[in-house]
Image (tube, rainbow, N blue to C red; front, side, top):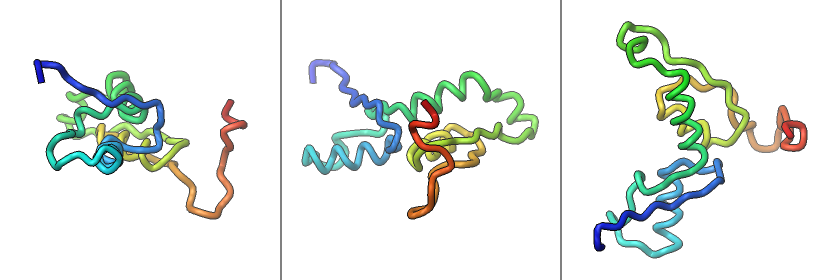
Length: 108
């Protein structure tokens, strides 16, 4: 209303924008179509856009070159957003019940 735009911003990279939208629709009891993926700004999306601006060259893709590969240490949501930005993703979340390659403390 009144020409104002609403965005939902989070520093949690665990969810993709689609997942954030679904979660908010459920929590806020929103009717279908009220929220859009474009209204969701998560750190996973921002990271993917940053990588896109630094590593992705459209002309390279038009010339048949492969998508740049990004090794991810993070969640499925982060992997999804980086893949959606056009990257080839390696790494990502470890299967349930297996020890992680690196803990959060080891990364700090």
